[in-house]
Image (cartoon, rainbow, N blue to C red; front, top):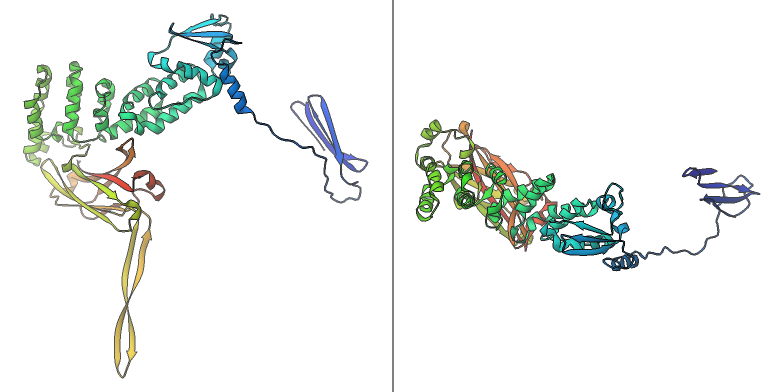
Length: 491
């Protein structure tokens, strides 16, 4: 038997010589021959064995990495010095840089790059990257760098600029995983801005979702007033914003407008004034000193606040398009829009239901919501009666009851119904928003939103709100937190 590969520079031959198995192996001009076993000449299969020698695979990678890391920024054998912003300098080895970075490869070896033959290369970097340049360059020697929510952006900037694929991908994955675990939640806006600039679509979408579902955290962060105009408009156009109330959103927007008064009109158009209570707006205008220009623009929009809360609905819908965005409720957390549910002692729960009721009021219309939730599953049993007959001179019937299990599963069923709604079902519908929360960095954050359209005439349900395999990530210190928001949507 014969086989070859790599253009016949590597080959083997397996055959018989005088009835004894022999193998010849060739590689790069060197041939080795081994043979042994019984004489094979009887037409039967035989087990052949070849002599072996003791062997062991040695792995000194860590030792080698240690030696290489010691050569970083050492003058001995270094062949180029990198000077950054005329303040930092590092002595490095071209070989270590060009093997991992296509940009350094071109910069330090291409005949088309004028500085490739120089012993000193000058680079200009962003100020936020300067504290991490040494760690970045040392990464080429060690393959190791420690990233955190505070420094991952500068490292990604450097990895992207110099095309270091492994580091770049690792930084992006880290940001995607840790958007909801930010230190004081100061980075979501800046990460989103950077993701848009560098076309990191997955990161941008993840940041957008986190900011939208946890807007109160962002509003209270130092980055709020630095948010870009286009980003703010995109946010205000969303109906899935999770925020305390439209009034709290309005106050945050006014704070932003005070920094950019020329943009007041365009931004205020995105505030849903019919969702604001008249007393809230009146007290704010009476107690807050605003720029006269900003104050006048707000006053132009006050009338619809009073109309939405005072004028009969039939009159209101004849004057306004109540199906438009300005009459569409966001995910408000304030008490008159829904209710939180905090389940303690989760791990000791039995398959019993948790029940909750709340009332919402919107455009002077009240709706009563009733919720039944089975956090760990539902068990339903029925009592069945049997009759036993005893004869002691006469018939005597003694009823016996047995329990039969009708349903027993681990599905977290959520059931909901509405009542006290007098409006025509043809012009509106009810939707229950279920805000699922996780615990991150000492605060609960919304990580998912599920919706159920609730029928006027019968109970509606979600068959399994949180699948069993996913539930542990929603539990912290034996506690689960959910927030329900009741919406009335006009058709």
